[in-house]
Length: 109
Image 1: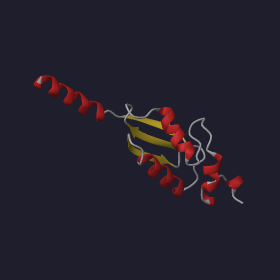
Image 2: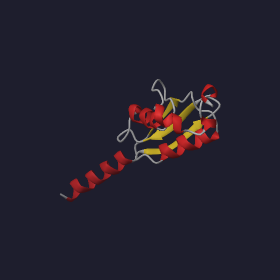
Image 3: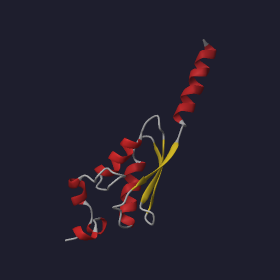
C-alpha cells in the first residue's frame, strides 16, 4: 500500500509539471499596452506558466500545462480580452473597451 501511494504521488507531481510551448498569431496587437494586457490576462489563467507577446512578429508565445489547457482555450482567452488569436476573431464588446492605442488604426475615432 505504501509503495502504491508513493507511485501515485510521483505520477501526480510529474503530471503537474508537464508543459508545452505554443506560438499563437496575434495580428491585431498594436502597442506595449496590448502586450501588458495579453500577458497579464494569460498569466492569470490556471495552467499558464508564462506568456510573452512579440510586438515585432505579431505573436504570443505561451508556456502552459497541456493537462489543463489546449489551443482552443488559449485562443478563446485572447479573443475574450479583445484581440484576434490565430483565426479566432476578437470579441467585439471587449475590443470596443480597449484603449484607443490598442485598436486598429482604422478604428481609432
